[in-house]
Length: 145
Image (cartoon, rainbow, N blue to C red; front, top):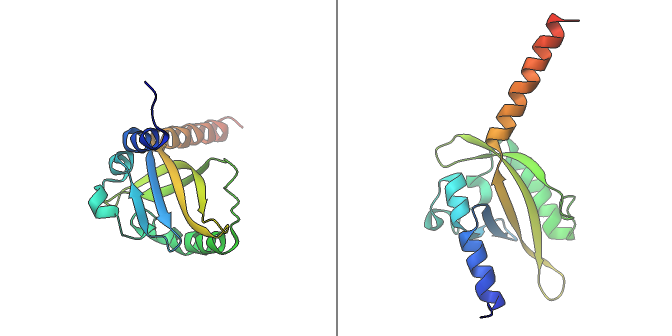
């Protein structure tokens, strides 16, 4: 039996363990899947209709919004060609998490940007392991010049 593309897309977004978050041109969250709830702690009903600020650390918001507005205005992003970006994010309880993500820009029929979807994965454990290894290497290098 064949799966209809719309059913496939809906089940994929709902069931994937990665976070899938879509925000409109103003940065308002319009899609929030179970993976986003798992990573960030906000239930779908808590996240929908709110600003992306709920997951952006306060000290990074200004830079984020400058880039977001520029992308909405120009349709260009330095991260739109499938690159994986690693950034800090914040959970509902205020703890930080490291996420790796890719973006998918959305345009209307005229080519005007209408929003961006981000597919995010929690990379906190790997980031912490890498940081611990770097510290050990620095200590070893300092002790053995």
